[in-house]
Length: 76
Image (cartoon, rainbow, N blue to C red; front, side):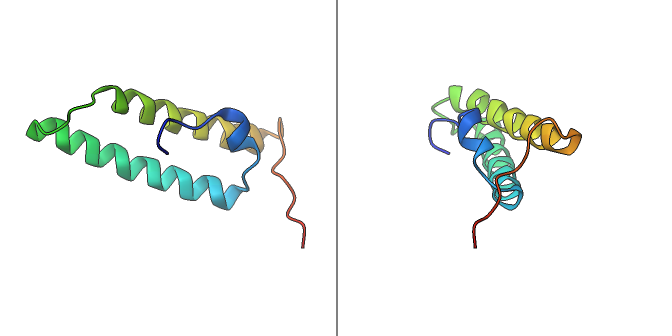
């Protein structure tokens, strides 16, 4: 996730892919917070981008849970 995920990009992902993306974003957020604490982070804007990405992912997951949107079907 270099420049942030767009909502339409997340809509096209399966639930498994979204969960993997969430895990990846949370790990990156942890590492960025660690860098802030040690004074090594150069780009503070990255924290905001990752937090917003996580919020987008949670929104998509909740919409699917409520049935407001559907996960794409996998073609076999």
